[in-house]
Image (cartoon, rainbow, N blue to C red):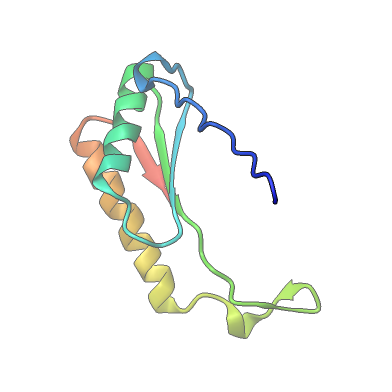
Length: 102
């Protein structure tokens, strides 16, 4: 018989009690959920902090430990990432949040 030890999930901090200098909102090129944008805006508004939005581009492999140019993201993938970032920035700015992104 094997014993399985499980930790209780950590309590998440109350967003209304956080004081931050900046908020990072990230995605791996998937659409950023409205709930994530809402939470980022809530934290940023309370703290007066900017939100930095970015996507992580996938590099599909390496050659001798270095990214291979043929495996870099395609133009379509870069454009998709920019679209995700731009959409989140627009949503944040509509709420009066200082936001930028890459």
